[in-house]
Length: 290
Length: 283
Figure 1 (cartoon, each protein chain N blue to C red):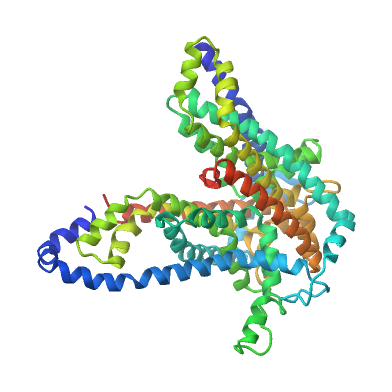
Figure 2 (cartoon, rainbow over the protein chains, first blue to last red; figure 1 turned 90 degrees about the horizontal axis):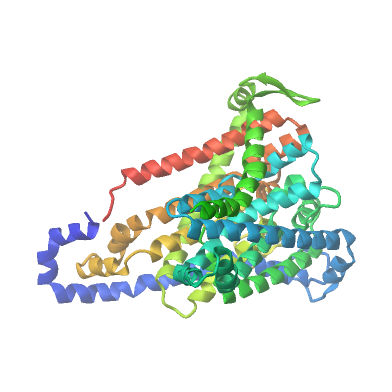
């Protein structure tokens, strides 16, 4: 029984008898909580965005100090970043790794999503849940396990790092593309097939163009997931295969300098731009719906 | 029919292959190490033993690590729920034009990754950072507080980093509720708070469960944030596994620690499901 229904039986007589005064009293009381609620939510947003704003501000510091607010304005830390071979190499490597992992994860995600949504009558939901598996196993564990495999099977470092990144990106591409397929009427393919198109023709000429924005968003989101990852790369990064987050992690462990703020600001800007593109294409929430 | 079966198999093959070869096989292989004997040269000896688990349970050093991991993960989950619920409520119920922007601002920080946000807290909590400067300016303190390398710093940063994982399942649960239920409770004189406690809250249980599960799992396995913000003061299970693999090279003990991490998660899931069953079922 609903709690609300319990209320009804307890005091319906009273509520109706004194109907008007009760409502007036609750009106004055009701004005208060929304203001408190909004204030609280505003504070939470301050908490969410504060550290990121502080990074951006620190990146323009003219001195070596990490003091906040910075004592002036300069772009020297951006110049420092561009002249540091370690960081630029790691940045480039993360870009290459992210794009490769995102392409593979999107292709695999597309076929999996299509199979779960259109080719299966009953167990599509099971496939969808199984696809989420890499999100439920701690990434630390996936990374160590892949490192262990490297001890016994001679595969190149880059391949294991790539495999790890494809693994952690695939749940997002599957979920994102399934959400896009939900928005495409299955009748359209049926119609194309009735008119003589094979399933594959219908797939590539009818479905793919319609879900293209969703697929592109899934790709971009997968790239972002790969670019931000620390856990997979924690064990699988090596000389020549160091990702940007790992380079930053090993640097920050020993010293702190605004050059890290400059690098992370570049990363933040890149990610915000990609986020806005995804938002325009399909809306970020549809991909986050895992 | 025959050809559509073949097509289905072909479409599912890449993911099946990826998950089997690079996820299930390696992870099972690694977990199997937990019952093997440690060997300094060959990584392990093929001798079955429970010594690794015995050591974790009996050695006070490992026991304190497990307790601290549980404490930090539990605190992070509780605070993320307390902080995230009002935000999810406003985002799910509000009709303001800002809703899309507010939603974006929850996801965008998530996308920057753990290292960027951990770094943000290093800058915030330093002795000359924003928090200390602010407190000194308000004359609440006179000398900078030691904020870095404390458990508080780790919990605050983990709540910040994992908050979106709490907010999204909550939004889904709250948005799928029939808003008329609250109106009905209101009409019947329940009042705002009572309607929330007796209608909204119980109906959002699934969201609370999924969100807490994600936050607990991710915080219990954290390595980077405790390493950078907790220093020596906070030694959690994730860092212990990291050190055992990369520095001590004791794979069997690392594997046993990882199993414990998975068992903690499993316990958490079981507790949640039990609690969910015991609670009075609305509707």
